[in-house]
Image (cartoon, rainbow, N blue to C red; front, side):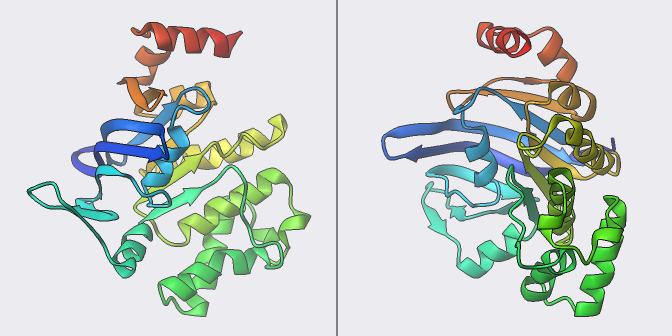
Length: 260
């Protein structure tokens, strides 16, 4: 994995998020450096997916600041801590830098694989059809599915659909890729084909934030591992330290329950 520790690609500072009276994120702060892979683990309902969705403003955070390559996303925070919401145009421009792949594939069922990948670059980034289709072919070859370019999602396995979803996100040429439990809906024998694509991206230096229950994958691929519980960062550090020598009782309990 290629890691440049000089540049923070994702900067999260004191981010809070509530849904009504339910507090989901409690002042979370962390950085993801350019080329780094951050894996996030934790129990269900701990705030992992909410944090990920805040990173591309699919969820609006209530307090704090999120910056992508130094640019604030969603809100500008003034010196007196007043937050000014960005225009939709600004948000769309910055969000285009953050690709996201979900647990459910979210492919358009009535569109071919080719169309699923080319639609956003053409409509959002004004890429020519020829350029978008050329890029789609390159990306499908990358994920091992070039021969499926004219198929429809219903003709693909779950693992194939998820690889198309990854190619679709990459077609926007994002600076950061977010993965939200992307293998949890797959049959066990299909998980490996998706993880291998993600591992390849990591080796190529893509900045990635991954919410996962695949502990071995998190250990092998990530530069940094974060354990979240009840909207708080309980531990963060090198994967081997977090997984093999946890310091907090809560993480020890989580890993024990996960392994048994």
